[in-house]
Length: 115
Image 1 (cartoon, rainbow, N blue to C red):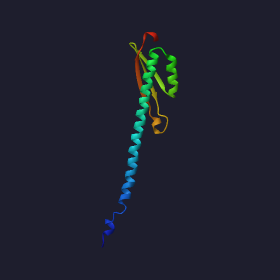
Image 2: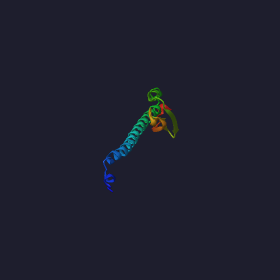
Image 3: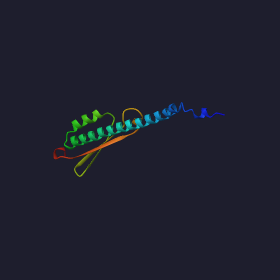
Image 4: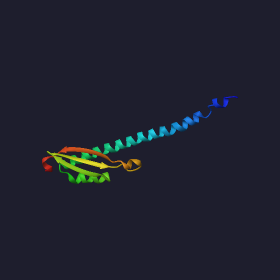
């Protein structure tokens, strides 16, 4: 009885490739998704800081224009001890990431002219 048929590994590379490729694609997708979420958060933090500065100095018209340019975002404003904080919350536009909410916050000192 010959066991040469059991020692033949001419298909093992194909099987390993078939298992490895989906794992690599999954990791790649997670990395790209993480980068997109981070970029979206940086955008919201930057916009929140800009809106807080504009509103803190009394330039509400420019702040409203900036808010309109952001699209569908939820805004919360808090003011404490002369500091105005603006929090923006939004979801990425497409894909599975749209199920997640990302937020950004920025604060600025309220000037006398804005009071």
